[in-house]
Image: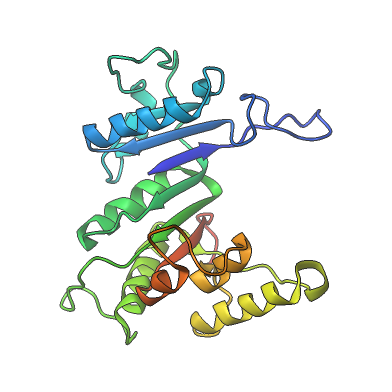
Length: 246
């Protein structure tokens, strides 16, 4: 998991980030519950970010579950390790603009703790971005859904559980053919058809390939078509206010 906060200076005309010297969010916190994964996060950070920018990227141990995030972020500093030279002097913020999670739902038992933690870490109107490849098995005795395909069933369950903690799917913006190009407009229309006609922001590989401008391959190992075949998608949720109708 990863959370980020954007801090901008309203007095600057370009409204650029003021905390870090590299373009991007002012604060990023990478989290995991596994010590080996956390060490890999640190290695990745140290290899890709200079000494100045490194103060904006922290690594924290976090187990999903209601109430865990606020306790951890309010009371703990960055997880120590043998090469740690940039532990924060103060506790990290407890609420963020964006929470990312990528390919984390191997077991549906982790879904409720995941969305609870994401919601807890978000500011009001913040975004939870879940990059999702269907893997978890579905217990039909516990979850009921009208969807036919397995990946649609799983998405329906995720959306329903997220709504219980005030995380609602956002909508794709309207695209003017003259502004974005006909191919992107067509891709969005196709994306909506795959979402049963809705414009909910469930981003399918067919749309993402147009956005990123790579028509055939996502990586050397995975093609867009292969990701489409397994039901991969990016779900974008927004945290709604307590009195907002979900």
